[in-house]
Amino acid sequence: MAVEELYPYKIERGMGILILASDHDIEKVTPTHEFDGQFIAAIEKAAKIDVVGEKLARRIELLRKDGNHSESPEYVLELITRDVTKFS
Image (cartoon, rainbow, N blue to C red; front, side, top):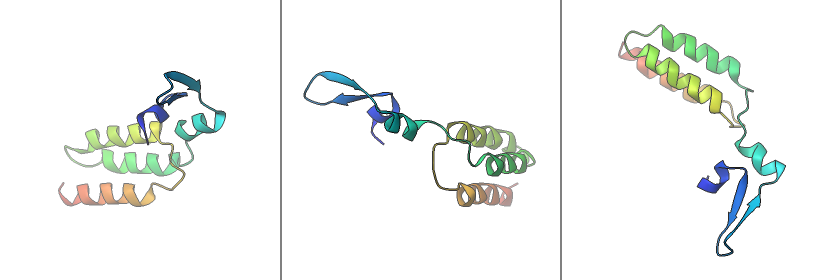
């Protein structure tokens, strides 16, 4: 994702102008909470891990709040929590 896609406007290169983004463009970067249940389960699982659990839980919470992906995070969350639990 290009930097200008993070804001509600587009920069038209070479023209020196800013153009307001369409609703579709804004929708692409607006956080969704479609997968909150999976994130919350991963946060609870991570919080039970020894020393790193609290930090990991906070990072997963940030992913949950800012997530705008249309794909399930289940695989990534499973990898994160599974690998960390090996070392605790």
